[in-house]
Length: 442
Image 1 (cartoon, rainbow, N blue to C red):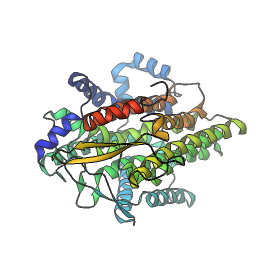
Image 2: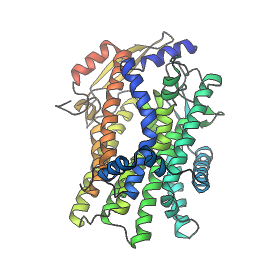
Image 3: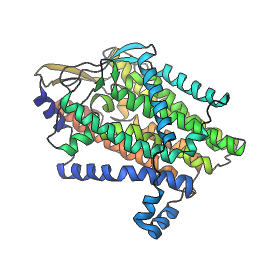
């Protein structure tokens, strides 16, 4: 299997029209970096008000925006470097079970070391201990947050250039190819499974150990900042942070399953995935907590507990959806689903090598409700860790809106990919499970 087949497979990933895709890519490349800075500045300096931001930009124009963009500082680079090197070391050196990923279109099967839970525990214990024993105060991270985001924006952009060049001159496997368009190749990526050396998987680092881990670290940072300033943590901040940490704990507990998802098994290592995880996750995903630092809300015990329980229930359902499908695949369709033998479709497909293989499509349990039902509790969980901010400003809900759009688009891309892969079997599957995400509606 050579580059030509990989190129062909890559072009099939473009499920929208070329013009729409090109417009979307250019728009995202040009607007995402400044939006990160605007969100941070609005949250921290303009009371979280979009109206205040709009008025500021109308009054001061482009020059005003340039003036609020913080320059990357030495302390920002030091914080990023220490954190990144620490997480890279944990990824390489902590023990973990060997896990095989899914077979790629060119027949490669990546091998991973599943030590995410250990890395997560070590990271949080180390970070909190540094604060507790007076070695490092996490409020420094919050106080230099704009500079950190600025450094991440530029540093991650350079890193994506490195990935583009690496995909051309030194790909890690045959799962690499070009669309023939430099902008698309930079945005979508060249390699499916890029590695440095034999064991350091780049996407595991960017997606899991830097991106998702930074979400937890920053959630704790915002709590500590509020505690250091006010002498207490508001119940709104506590509920929001607890729900985010429960979700992130679930993520690392299920990390080996994540390696079978679109992010790892289908989306290549480019700006979309890698810059997104290195910059967008630490800034946008953490934004409800960033907002609550300066906008503590007293929910009261009854409302706080109600939101907490509802959020945990959503996170559990999201986990159980993934667990149900993972167990179904692990047992080759022989596991029980809700106490019964599973309903399934045996679908055959042809690889790029011309080999005929089969997959099992689960059509019962959570996966009988809709083809991507697991997105429903994930979106609702995001709502519940945002709603402690109540409704004075819209901006805390940007992540919730963004996640909804992202997952609906991902569901469409996944459906289009499966339709191309499975053909008539996918049509049978859609007839049996007619709804894409929301049962009875969509």
